[in-house]
Amino acid sequence: MVTLRILFSPHSLTSFRKPSSYGTLAHGPGTAGDSLSYPFPSTLAGVLAGIAYQRGLCSPPESWRREWDDVRGCLQSLFGGDVRLYSGFAMLEGEDELRYYTPYGYISRGVLAEFYRNTEEYSVDRLVKAAVREPRLEYTGIALRRDSKTVLEEHLYTTYYLAPGAIRLSYTILIDGSSILPPSINGETVRMGGDGKTATIHVEEAGGDLSTHLILGDGGGCGKWMLQLVTPALLDKTPWTLGEPILLDEEHGLKLASLLLGGEVRDKVKTVILTVPKTDPTITILAPGWSIAMGRPRRPHLLIPPGTTIAVEAELDTIESLVARGLGEHVDLGWGTTIAVCTG
Image (cartoon, rainbow, N blue to C red; front, side):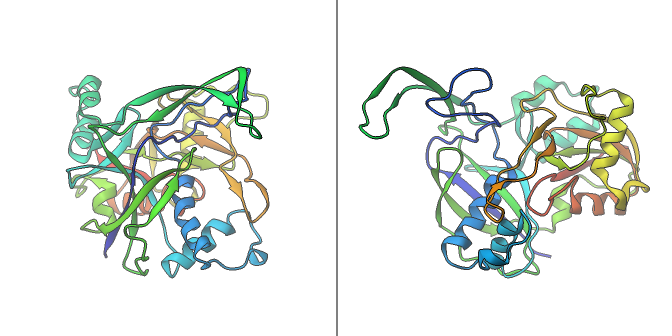
């Protein structure tokens, strides 16, 4: 099995907008121009699908019947068949080591595996020091009239960007390249993120099969695992009833873990505890992008943030199946990418 990695290397400032209302004329509660420290899977999948669309490779829009047919159809055309994207990774300029997203930044596999195996001894401070993330740059501007390009008085706005400098990250996707044709996109310049900033795509072999990148450390004889989302997961169901406040007590945590794991492996896994990080966004309702196929926003889903962990007990073959599939819905597009670390 050949694993390929697709790197998206920003040329300059980049912004991955948090779910919110934003514009230079937007004001009031709920407006913001802040940036996530990672791209949503839909951002990277959309860039690749957009290449196919621009090249005229996609099936005609009249054949799109479901709201995700646009992205899936274009990806199939670009790669020559069904493709499964694994997002949530990055490469640091000057290194040849894959890094994994956590709420603290992107961390190397060795450090992350050691942290989960020795959480009582390995302090969070050490994890933070080992993490890499691009610094945020605050930018304040003033809105312009679209027709005359003259200043609109009293319409100041603030937005935030990720600013590559001494730290230059390439946001990375893994794919199983054994059953598809590597697309001719190496060196392609694309637009990516909230403001359409440019980036260059690189395609290269990652070495090893997918499981060596998704399972950290030797899993032989292991029965206890820590699962971690490196991308947000989407669910079309919720463990909370209508009108009930979102409280993540033990009961709802186990219900949420059951929904994430899905029916295929649920009976083979014993869930010990689920933990959700205090990040922004945290658990929320999200419409994950715009559907060209339907001409409207995609149907809302429950979003579970990256960095969420589930401590489980299971056999190695079950864990291999679980990380190969991912957690939640629309995993083939990079949502719910999951890694596993043996803890005992």
